Length: 46
Image (tube, rainbow, N blue to C red; front, side, top):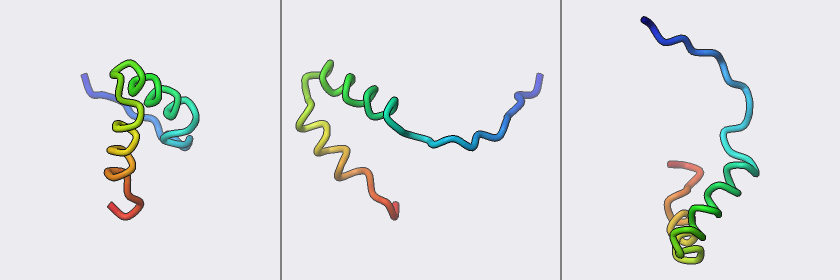
């Protein structure tokens, strides 16, 4: 059985993604340190 893929033209992030990441950071009790780590990792040019 071969997997089938459909083109996706929507955004890859958005408010749902931000909410989910925020929830995980709160659950892990690292809202500030986790957010700072993500800021260091997330760069526009790789």
